[in-house]
Length: 434
Image (cartoon, rainbow, N blue to C red; front, top):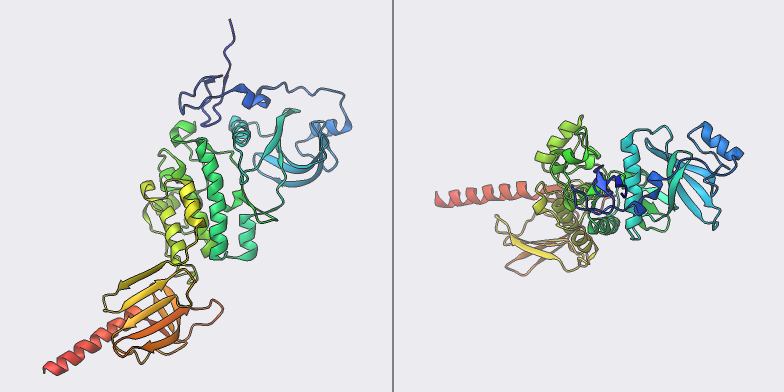
């Protein structure tokens, strides 16, 4: 009778899946050929070299060590709680690779499952925005995989070095991350830990999404995928439904990406808390602070996109990462909005940046106290009055965005100013009636 082999599901992590059959939890099919290293013999074959003996004595690799008779260690790229990453030369073809090795001391079953899951996911996704892997296995009781070497900085480091990103760079980076997420979502994988630390900005400007170690299948809830009920993720970037233990889908990643985009343009995440519980309450109940009150040069179209990602109700967000990527990538020239304000003034807003006037206010009366170079505060943004014209019946006040590097002077708050104008009109009317 043929032996029945059971293994973890690569999509959701469920442990009891028969080889070649669908997972009872998420429906994904699991094949042992996808993760052969997880059940490979752990005995070291071949003669014990000095490099191998050094590997047995500790968990770290050192410059000059040769791992798995193939990878020559050139330098360390970083260490984490689960494993270490090294810059290596592949002796098979001479190429430079990144070698990720699970710590020998990381004996927790969850760490091994996450490591296997990451390899299984990366082996299934082919996308320029997701790291490629070339080899994996077990060597000296340690799981490992070799992937393409990415030269660059993680997005967290870029933020600390540069400060906030320009709206154009934010849209470009966001679109590339969304495209990579779309590739994962297409095969039923939710990343669940989208944050600047897991995004690499290559030296050539390309964007790569990293760390699928906590990724899971679409629609899997927290109680199903964790034996302890502990929520996995980074609280600053987690969607409201992730805190609530609800079923997750692609829209959870879209919310997390919205937090990243918010941070890119504002320099900080929208919600802060001393505890995960307090932070979770803010994600679930508090609206994010408006972006343009902090960064006046952020166009309204980008703010609208980010705030749509951050809707509390998943049904109100972008429904697919592809839709988000398309919206971030498309040209926004020619977008003008015209509306009549309660004061009777007409306002024309232009976020396309194709016109020198970001804001035009059309009034029936001359505003003699409005002078060129004054700063108008309108809807949380500051504008510089640059041109005044009249047709005899209407006055046109044209504003550009206030330059970030200039100090604000003679600030006029439109809402307060319009209130004063109403009072003045009522006073004139009262005098006339009396």
